[in-house]
Length: 185
Image (cartoon, rainbow, N blue to C red):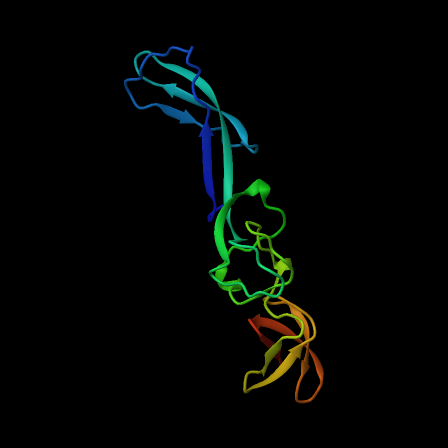
């Protein structure tokens, strides 16, 4: 993947194998259609006395994910001090994990997030139930802002129910930012 890293660990050559030094740079061939983590790499020399051998190798694809630097308690706000991006092996990532700090900075933890654990959409809320939010109702010609109370929790682009504090009316809105929801008219 574009944002990922590939780590290839090649096994060491058995010391009992004796090969002639290569007079030209060594060539390596990794099979193109390989899907697993373990494979054999063909190493070969194309000089006047050619030779080749196969060495076992492990391929690990790592992806950037947000993790907790320290244990984050329920209700705590996520900041640069308690989250960081770390590269983790793709086979150890379960479900959709977040990788953009900008999206989660200022969000709250819905539940306790242990140190070193990945941060997912399920573990945070950009707007949490009971938060005071700014409601923006807009159309092509005008825009109105008012305050409200979130009746449910949600993340960016989630639809949540909000109670308008002026009219006491309950409306469905879309989360756009931390403590900001939008209604399109």
